[in-house]
Image (cartoon, rainbow, N blue to C red):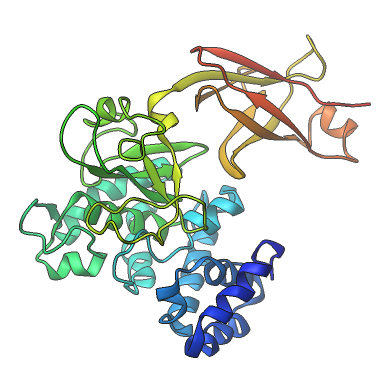
Length: 365
């Protein structure tokens, strides 16, 4: 089992009570390549799932998540930590635990068969899922805000923005696109809350569920830009399955604290254009490399330098320090020179200025 799950896995099994045998059965029956996924889920499950989920449910969910990773054109390029946290999970917030994975895989993989990127797949699904399932928004006809996908279908297709976001997120995950529910408990300048979806395609992007707009070009983008970082009521959260120190605020049930979250407010309020390049030495030549930026211990963005233009263009929250994993392309001269240490890690900092240029140089001594 993965080291990161070690202590958490032992604690989870101890907390499972009478259901412990089901979780152990899932770990024992999992394929060798899937055991990391099973361990990750169990180590991060809330108590309700430790006590209630059965082995077959877990194994079926894991099986089809890895199948989507294998069959989608983008699946193998998704960083493993993002696959575990935003593709593999069977749930988003506190909704009913539906066994949707195989059904959604079989329904929607054919829908995205012509798509080549996670972004294309997400936008295609955002149109096709709701039309094919006859699902639409309604503020009062939906029975409750936090509906699972099948609860929405049982409600004649009526859902809140949260129910729509859960359905789109699950559809994205079913085809191997990292996705998560995001939202704010309270807008800053107008009344109300809102929930939407973030998807990852070499960086996080956002879209309104069942809304036909390009990524990051939504009606609520201006409102989100006015969020207040540090104000628990007015900042923006993204739901996580991996345990964090922060809880996703559920405005429909404020007593629930078991849904982990990340504070993503800076992406909406201080997003800046950044040009990133890697040089073989200071003031030297650009070279081909893959740069993975990690923020607060999780992959945030990935880019490729030296293709056509020597700098990669990114949109990143300003005023942040990122850990940068730099892997030179195998065919580059620097890659051959660094074959003993094929990658190196450094840190980069973003300013509050738009159009910042960041230059990374390897340490070759």
